[in-house]
Length: 180
Image (cartoon, rainbow, N blue to C red):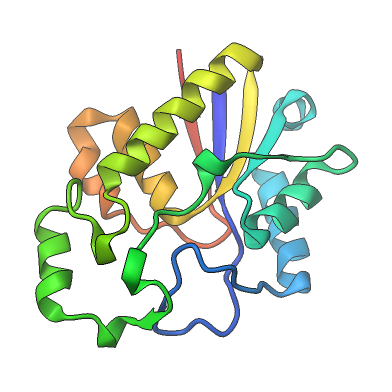
């Protein structure tokens, strides 16, 4: 099974903000442009037969609708961004350096802002994987968030797990996982 993990387009008006699960806007022109770039990266036959899933966040749903058209994507709660708890909506500069350092020292287990740890996100990811393995064929496309993509990459390669959790995941990027 091939899984294509796609990060949503860049939100607008969030510079310096820890937005996490907040529903933030994306520009419609950027969504269309990102969809065209994503479609160019996924082989046509894989896309034609793929089931399209997305986080329920509007920044993911809009892109997934473009990718899936004329079909409809399937929203999946397990694909939502990591919860940053009390940090959500705060400027990154307003978050205590001690808390940021605690997270940096335990990226897998620390719960930023009292929200979710990467380990908790991994449990959601694995639950979703079990479900799609039962329901789908050869290819799946999932429009989701950087936090979930990092965790998925970490779970797919135990040797590189710590580097995957710190990986740069650009907006609109596509990450292919092959699951045997």
